[in-house]
Image (cartoon, rainbow, N blue to C red):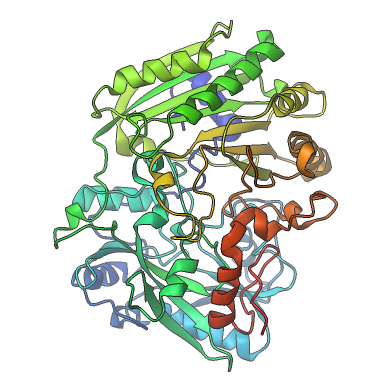
Length: 564
């Protein structure tokens, strides 16, 4: 996603904040291994020493970490802690339990199960739907204090707690070891949900999804008798808990238990040198931004940009492609938003980087008769871009209401779909925060088999995001109607949703959309779980039945346990 530059670029970014990285996290830390709460340094030091182990670590004792804190209605803190990022949703749980350790999570889950109260988990709070604000949720677990990032020598892997924001993760990994993960470009999003749903970003075409580097997870699960306990599951072939690891490689959060720790190490990475166990962080990045005004935007011009963007990705998204390091975004706003923006990002030190950016911009704009109002290329430190405050945030302090819908693309849009996009972006019902985004995908992501992880959509080249952002509750109905009609129009040929086929390939669970489970908006006959997980769903159901047999962890799009 583009970084705010001068006034014109800043305005374009602030209209939606560009969802480009697909959800990443916030504030960055400055120490090599750190956390933002009392005792986090102790936790991090323990990780560095390699003593975190299965179950509850010694460093997770209440004497070492923050919490627990219980906040109930009537407490002056309650309303402040109630909402996540999307202000459309706010539940009224009996209590918000702010926890700082695995042990505290175990106890909180145990108490909730014993009292028969529904529990939900929040790490970064950037869920697009009301999963943690469901009226049935009586205990909201807030994991935000669990934000330590460090190296676990015992597992030869980097340990990340779920409350760590991606900005914090990137800064810590870079500062300490010069490595990174191919996660999202929105630094405010928590690692907890981002990792569990798959995770992708500007480096994914080059290095794959985040979960392609996931070595293990620590999860608080609930047994059939109601016992809550912490379990470690890894990708080791002989690990008896391996199926629980697999479920967290794209199965989505809130399904199988409470993730309290992730371990990351690239497949095939050998030795004990931490700087060689994850992809190297880029030293600097080239970014090119082109912005056009809607004033002279014709249907031929807009559909030409969209068509060319798709064609380029069809031709340049194979694993090992010399263009796999280039990440492209195309963001047409609604006419009321006033702009259409193209962004290219690449590691500046890749051979021929500058020429690849030039070729990409030329290919996308080929045959399109438009004069940009902004056209600039710049080179900047990679970390500067990945930790820019507010980058990728859906809206700002005033516009915190939004609805996001999405779809995978195996090739470019059809002509019918292109016409539907233009028709809806040009109509009189969309607002200045409405629009869509095409995100480059593919590359090394396609090198992994669909069943090797829970991410079934491996043979795709782009993600499409349809969005609207607004400020006032009074405008909810109009904004929801606009984005729903756009989506239904684009996928009119397949029942209003992106049914897997020659062009479309379902949707991404980290962009959850409860409409896909609503027969009023999904008339395809294809259930939401197929759109999200395809043929991997039965295995996810079996994992669910084994590790959450009481169905403690559930939400509107949750995996249902296998019967029998």
